[in-house]
Image (cartoon, rainbow, N blue to C red; front, side):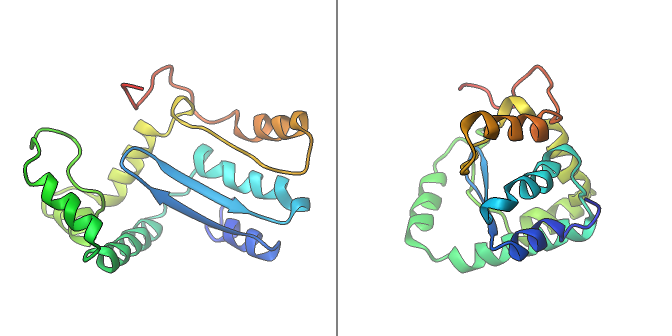
Amino acid sequence: FPDEAEYKRFLKGHGGKCNAATGDTMTCYVFDVAPDHLGGALDRFSQFFIAPLFTPSATEREINAVDSEHCMRITNDGRRSYATLLLDANPDHPLHWGSGNAKSLRDEPRARGADPHKEVVRFFQEHYTAEDMTLAIVGRQSLPELREMAERRFSKIRVTGRRALRGD
């Protein structure tokens, strides 16, 4: 799907919506849609993992969205407690903070000579593999039908033979 707005437009046009949330070790993508349009939604959704567009403008919009969420939640007591714990954390440990902002995701990488858009593409190529993904589909179709829908649409996700996430 060459139009980056097609997925959301399709869902909205068929009574659905979508969202995503990123945690310390995973990102969870969710959507709902009218039952008769599940196949079309899966067609579009699967392409995010098979042939993502990764336009520079989309990267910039996502950085701005992350920055906005970060600013909204910066005074949250839970985040402040977490930040206090991290003051004493091993600086060599990969986990340091739970969110990014425009400074950490765009400004600092550019100051180091890195291109944030290229870094997003590199991260996808390194970490978005079938071995590290789980798919759950809920629909009114029978289990064999849902399985066939999933296999037909998601079997082209890259398989590397290795897991990016270790220690599971």
